Image (tube, rainbow, N blue to C red):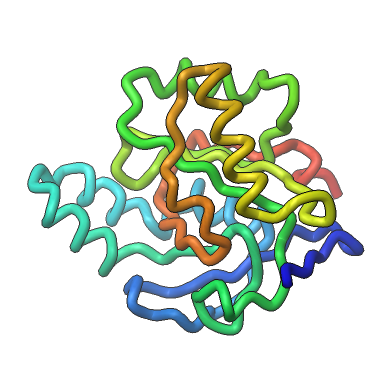
Length: 188
């Protein structure tokens, strides 16, 4: 049973320290925490190093060992769907190997149905992570993922990484100085 933190609308989720084999969260993050982490210096050197590696296997290994990550869809006792404490009301959609990242950014930012909560370039540099709100009192996380993926495919010919359907999906946090956060999270 998925629970949600709609009462506070805080959109909190678990943050994990590297490596990816660490399944115990170290803290709870908000969207503003994630934004500050991504635009800050913490992951800058790892991000540039990763993007300089040409061998795909070495890239995957480097990323899994050197990047902190979060689970945007909820807070967890441990990173596994059964470890869910509370759903965040967020869904992270991942778009890999994009030819026109700026064009896709513009499409998603101007979408008439979904408001961007957070958007940033993937650690590899050729993809995007798009975080939007969902209401799991109306449908399950997986149902939202399937419906939104289908909508994006039909509307924009965009293919989402299917792993996003998992509530406990890890999302590596890179450096991206042009990360976009919904302005409502910057207001005090």
